[in-house]
Amino acid sequence: MKHKKLITPIENWVLNETARIFVNCEHLGDSAMEGTMNAINNNSAVMQVVLANGKHSKRSIKILAKAVRENKAITELSLKDNYIHEKDAKILASAIGESNTLSKFELHDGTIGIEGISEIMLAIRNNNTMRILKLNEVSFDEKVIHIITEMMWNNTSLSALVLENNHLGNEEAIAIGEALAVNQTITCLSLRDNGIEARGTKALGYALRKNKMVTHFYLRDNAIGDEGAEVIGEALKVNRTVSEISLSSNRIGNKGAKALAEALKVNTALTLLSLKCNEIGDEGIRPICEVLRSNASIVELYLEGNRMTDECAHVLGESLSRNGRLKNLYLENTKLGDATARTIAKALSNHMPLVHLLLPGTEIGEEGGKAIGKALEVNKTLDYLELEHTNIGAGGAKAIGEGLKVNKTLSYLFLEDTKIGTEGAKALGEALRANEFLFSLYLESNVIKDEGANFIAQALKLNKALSSLNLDNNRITLKGIVDIAEMLKVNTALKHLSLRSNEVKNEGAKVISKALEHNSSLITLNLTWTGIEVGGAKAVGEMLKKNGTIAHLYLGDNKVRDEGARAICEGLKVNRGVAELNLYNNDIKARGVEAIGRILKVSTTLRNIYIEEEVLEWQ
Image 1 (spheres, rainbow, N blue to C red):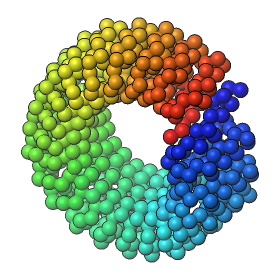
Image 2 (image 1 turned 30 degrees about the horizontal axis):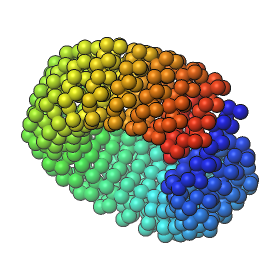
Image 3 (image 1 turned 90 degrees about the horizontal axis):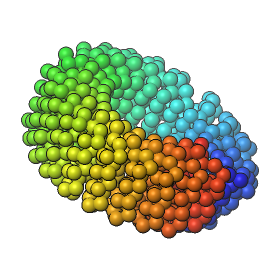
Image 4 (image 1 turned 135 degrees about the vertical axis):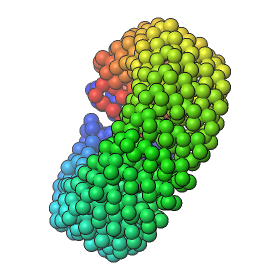
């Protein structure tokens, strides 16, 4: 009864005019599954159909096949973690082959069997409208690979082929490489996490020398090593079409990095290079940094998770100062420290056109934070800055605050777990009084306490720009919550507020709820793990009767229980704004679930509900 109460409304909702349907079929019985398939077939507006965690009967597959064959609106079909009998897969395959509107098919995990997959691949091979094929965590054999490579040789419509987490290995990579060498349609190829080593990479490298269509090539999470990187480097010396390449997590060391740096000296097409999470040290990073002085094509460079240190700080700074093209630089989780922060800050002060800079998890301390803060006073391009999990402290935060007072470009600032404390929060609060451009501020896990929350809240009574604020896990108690609530009564800019893992409790929930009865701007409120019980949930329910703008409400990991859930549902009876409600892990039993089920039948806006171990998603 519990699952039936929650699931039954899906069929009615699917009949609504909507362009995308996501149905979690985990607890659907045969009757409900068939009803859902019928509803999809009768929906004349749906373009994307995503079915997850379903155990399909032969009848439900026949109805789905009928929808694929006859519903001309459906262009995308995604099956994630489904069970379909091999013989029934043949029915679906026939419909896919006959469809003249389906342009994207995705198969993720699930149980279909080799024969079932083969039938679907044969159908796609002969389908002239299919443009995107994604197979993730699917069991392959030689027959399936043969069909896929044959498709690459002969299909004239396929433009994107994504084969990820399939344990293909070298032999399969060789077959794909041979087909890619002559293919004239595929522009995007992803072979992520397939156990491909240097031997398989040789065939792919040869293909890149010959192929003149591929623009996006992704090989991350394999094991190509230095030898494979050298092969790719040689290919990039002659290839003139690939603009994005990912070789992340491939056991590449200094030797492979040097080979890629040599390729960058002559390659003028590559705009994105990802080498994150490899084994590259200063010896390999240095030549890549040096080539940035003259390379005029690289716009986005990922070097995070390697073994680089401040030893290459000077060459990095010199290169960045001379490079007029690089927009996005990712250096997180490395051993870079204050010396590197100072060189980057110098480049930013010299008007380097960097837009995104990510330095989280590095060894940058207060001096590095001060240097970056100083650069913000003059820089006119940086839009996105991540410094979380560093040690910039209150001193670094104060310098960044001073920079923000005059900076007119930075929109996103991430300072989670940077040890800024109350004093750092005070400096940022003062900056927010003057800054009119910062859009999002993340201050999670900084122990700013009530006093820090007060500084931020007082500033936001005047600030008209900040849209997103994260104050999670900051030891804020009722006193700080009251200040935040008072701010919500007058602030008209803030749309997303997260107070997760603070001591909100019932009284805090009451003051926040009371403030939101008069607030018409906040869209997202996160009160997860804040000690809210029945009394607080009742206040939230009353707020929902009057507030029509909250769309995403997160109350997971509290103790609202049945009585609190029912109070929230009473509010939802008249509320027309909430689209997503998270009540996960709230000790809700049968009566609470029944109340939620009744709301689902009448609500015209509620799409996602998270409750205990179940997740219902309709988008």
